[in-house]
Structures are given as structure tokens and as C-alpha cells.
Length: 275
Length: 359
Image (cartoon, rainbow over all chains, first blue to last red; front, side):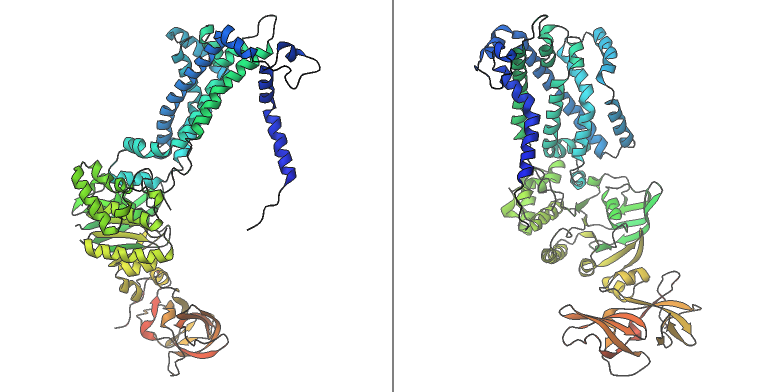
């Protein structure tokens, strides 16, 4: 076997690019523990002096709307993930495995639909939702986000199903299973990694989505985290330390969800099907 | 126990025809092997019998019942797949019991049948394991067991041994033969390995480019290949072919000096034909003289162990001969070879069909 030579330049470059990509987050976290004076100090304060937890205390005591917005985002994100995984899973399976006549064109069409910028759909969605009474409801934003992110889920899941050996389904057919039973008892249990990965991406996309969330949730109690944070600055003040703190708090649920499900992305779950 | 009949069976994908006009009648308890190079339509034919591919042309009957549009599970067939296709998230027991569960067989009956088959295949200690915890051979046994448990009318095997290493393949081949003798179930077995076909089959169906090239016992297809394709496909190393031109009473090799006397075939009005001789049928070192003996020079000698392969130049014609490996001739040696007329084959170069022997 070839022995790997240590490549110091490579490590330096990797470290550098990691630092560059993480810098905004590091800066965010540092800002959230600075005092207001520290934030506006000149020359800029790289290391918070003094450290303070005051901003976090302030958010929990003085800005319940920010906490509420994080809860809203969580509710919407969870709802969207569930809806998209159920519909996307079934659609993806049908399109990848049932030898449908127009499966190829349908996949392209689904992709094409997702190319429209969400803003261009806004007037139509807003008017319909207004008439249906879906503005400022969780159901409304969940439906809107689901429509937005369903295409990517269909694509991701159908390509994941494509990696499972077709013989497995054929064996199931020989055993006497129908398509629905094959999907539920063979495909689903083997597709957990695909569902977890897709679910995570959809959850994060929904969590970060801005334009629809801004327009469809107009009451401050219903706002999602990104909207609430962006609207937080007052007319005359720009409290960076508070905004940073809120942002850090808004990142935590995503980090938590990722951390929890990363353990579930068990590699080798499909091992043992074939050779 | 079942008789399977394929009548003019055909499969097309759009304009592409992959299987055409397959006629085959398989008797109860017979072991039939579909053999051919990849892409010859043998797997597609098997999958049409299984019900995994729709039948575009012709008719499939099992025990006289038309099966063209019958659901796979209701055809009374069980299939063993090349890559085993076990449910990786289910235990060996559940893998084997699945079909019975789905057809609502009572739980004690399932237990009894799975236990019996597991015992037969030596899988009893592994019933609670998942497939990932088994070796390749064990997985293949589970796949076979899953088929046996259903007590099907017909077993279908789709290259079941080709994922196993050479040693295990030989072992499993023998096990499958024993199993067939014991169960006596009609079996249809697809492979591209002629050794598997020759050793296991009651009858071999050789397929080429979507059509049946010959149906016969292993001896038939080896001794009396019906055409050029079968002659070249069966046997290893492959049969030597040379193109001959009529020269008076006898025949001369095209582009070479080799002349042969009148051939024992019904050559009719042909003035060209393809002559075939198997490497193992060329007699080397025969000192006798006669019309079928020629001078030859060894151009290359390869020792395989028990046998040796000799590349011979016979009056300007290249031939491969298979001889005993002990004390075989070396490169550069001159020797005499005999082409025994009884072991020659002749084919019409236009149709590829074998020419009949003179009575």
C-alpha cells in the first residue's frame, strides 16, 4: 500500500477555508455576549470585554415575541417536513419505480416548477390564502412551504429509492405483496437515511424561508424567526447584540435537530441485501 | 409438480425485440437450463415465466392453465435471484416465512415448514439472524429456502451462483442438484456458465440474440450442435473453425495449403463450408499415416495442469489442440496430428446450420 505523506499545505488551506466559512457564525456568537458598548467600540473588539449574558436574559424577559417566533418556526418546519416526506415519498417511489409512462417528463416538470422564484408566486398565493382564511395560520404557511419544497424532496427521495436493488421489490412481488405493501414494509424501512436527509434539508429550508413567511404571517404573534429577527430593529436603534442573540437562539433548534438525526443516518442499513 | 409450456413466446420493448418465437415444453420434474451469452434473452424469458415481465407475444401455460396475465404470486412459481434479494431488515426466519404469511398460512404451519426447510439447508442456527450477518453462501441458501418453503410448482433460478466464489459455486451446484433430486420440482435455471448447464441440466436451451438456437440434452448439444453458434458456444476452449473450398473430390482450406479428402457430410451443392473440430478431439503424436493425418508445428504450448493447450500450425491453418498435460510437446516441436472424421462438424456458412452426416 502507498504510504500517505503528510501534506501540511493542504491542512493550512483547509483550516483557512474553515475559518472563513465559520467566521460569520463565530462573530455572531461573540457579538451575542458583548455589551452594547463593546459592539460599537472602535477599534472593533474582537474578544468580548467584558463577557455578558445580559442579552440572553433580556431576550427571555423582555422580548417574548422573539421566543414565540422560534416556536412558530419550529411548528411550521415540523409540519412542512411531515407533509413533504409523506407526499414526496409516495410520489418519488411512484416516479422512480412503477415504470410510469411519463415518469421522466413528470420529473422534469416538477423540477421546472421549483425554478419559479417564490416571490413571483406571492400575489397569487396571498390572494387565495386571503379568501380561504389561511393568512396568519400555521396550516397556511405549511401548505405554502410544502408546495415550495416538495420538488426537491421528490427528487432526493426518488434518487434514493433508485439505489435500492430492484430485485428486492421483485422478490416482494413474487412473495405476493402489492405496491402499497412493498412501499410500506420493504421500501420505507430501508429508506430511513434518505428520509432523514431529505427531512433535514426541508426543515432547514422551511426554517430559513423568508418572503412567503413575511407576507403570509402578518401578525407579530405568528411571525417566524427570520422575519421576527429582521423586523426587530427599532426605528432609531439597531441593537446588534440583541439581534445576534436572537439569531444564535434561532440556530440552536436546527443544530439540535441535525445532531439528533445524524445518529439515525445509519450507514450500512442496506448492507446484506446483495453480495 | 407441473408441466410448463412456452408457445411462440416473445418480448418487445417498443420497436426493440429482445425475445422471439420461443417454443419450449418442459416436463414435470425436469431441470431445464437456459444458457446463452449476456443479452441473449434468457433472463427475460425466465422473468416472463415468473410474471415480472409482461408477455407481448405467444402464450405461457403451467399445467395447461394460461398464465400470461396471472399475478406472479398466483402462478405457483418461486424465484431465486442472482443477488439473493433478501429483506435486509428482516430475520432469516421472516425472510423465509414472508410468502406464507402473505397467503395467510396459519402460524404453527409456517413455523413447521420454515423449520423443516431450514433443517434441510443447514440454516437452523441462523434463523434469528439478519442477512447482513450471513456469508454469501448462507444468504444464497436463505434465498433458496425462501423459494422451497412455498412448495412451488416450478422453481425459477436467475444465475443464482454467479455472485459466489469459484469454490463455493461448485459446492452449491452440487447441493442444488441433490435438492432437485430430493424435491423433484420442475426447475428452470438461467446461467451463462456452460459448466453449470452441462452438469445440472436434463435439457439445455441455448439462446442467441433472443431466439432458441438449440434444445437438447447436454450430450446432444456437445456431440451434435445444431448450428455454428451452438458449436462455438459449447465447449472450452471453443471449437476450431476453418473455412473450406471444394477442390475436386476433396476440400482445401481457404488461404492455406491444407487439403482434406472427401468429407463424411451431405454437402449438396455447396462449394464452401465451415468445418469444426474440438480442441480435445485433435489427436496429437499419432504416428499412423492416413488421409486424415497431417504434419503440424507447435507454435505455443500452455500448460493448464492436467491438460495442455497447443497452438498448432497445420499446413498454414491455426488450430488449438487440448492434450494430456504430462509430457506434452513444447514450442517448436514438429509432430503429426489426426483429425478424426467421426468427430468433425460441418456447417453451411450462409445459414449456420449443421450439415447432416452421410448415412
